[in-house]
Amino acid sequence: MRKVYLFMMLSLDGYFEGPNHDISWHKVDEEFNSFAAGQLRKADLFIYGRRTYRLMEEYWPKAADDPNMSKDNTEIANMINNTKKLVISRTLASVKESGNWKNVELAREFDPDEIRRLKEMPGKEIWVGGSNLAVSFVENGLIDEFRFIVNPVFIGKGTPLFQGLNAKLDLELIETRKFKSGNVLLTYRPAKGR
Image 1: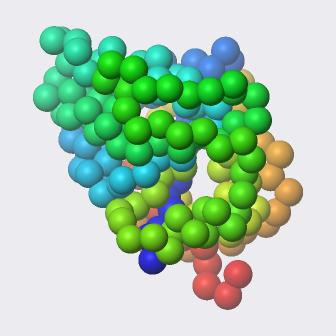
Image 2: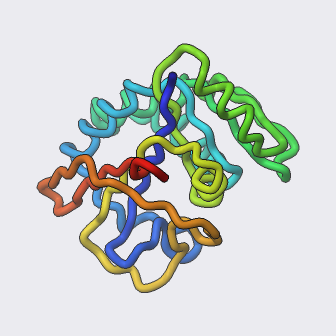
Image 3: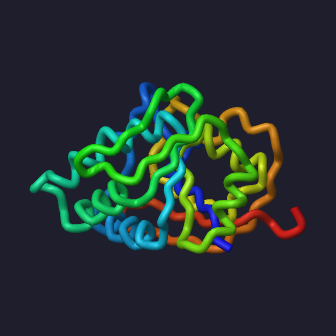
């Protein structure tokens, strides 16, 4: 069975983005990019909500053609651009492939049974992107592992992770990793007996 992973950057005060979707505070360096590329190689399906999808679609196709990108960032761009992407949105009229941006499909509704069916199919990891969408996955018990990169910064205000979550979920810490930047990876899975 394939596993579903949530991978999110966080500030120390619990925000995944600042006001106006600002993520300029993310501490990204060569060590982190190498780590991220290794993580992405394990996935063959990304599931995005509308907002995360639009951010990814705006940035990564251009990044793949940028001659100033590092080798790791170019590899990341190519993986994101070419890996299958499922966008779950009631408001997007359509999604489309263009240039570097490939393998995109739109679903109008979040369907937990469809996600369970995808987990049963052969393949690599499934990654979920987007805080609002992640809430639906958490509430339906569909995330197998949470990978949080905590950045050593307080941003004061923004969008909290899992805003609107109405369920309690006990987690078990299974791995930590410290980066030279001061970022810390905290990896959790749902606690047994949940």
